[in-house]
Image 1 (cartoon, rainbow, N blue to C red):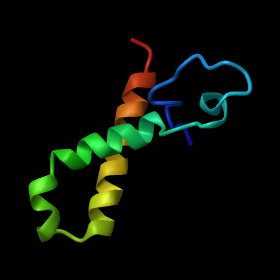
Image 2 (image 1 turned 90 degrees about the vertical axis):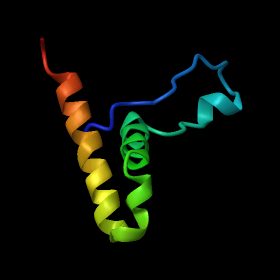
Image 3 (image 1 turned 135 degrees about the horizontal axis):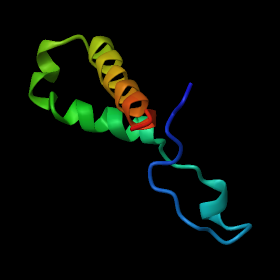
Length: 69
């Protein structure tokens, strides 16, 4: 699965904490942003459904981003 790579890549010095800590992926970041758009509806939906929806949006965004223009 294409996770989009690192959401916030940085140039780290070899052997440092930044080098060994991968952080969130672009897919995770997109999913979190999608959830923000539905924050007011959290109490009205099954959370498993909401998480699947958010990652579906993230996957679609990554797929669109990877298309050749």
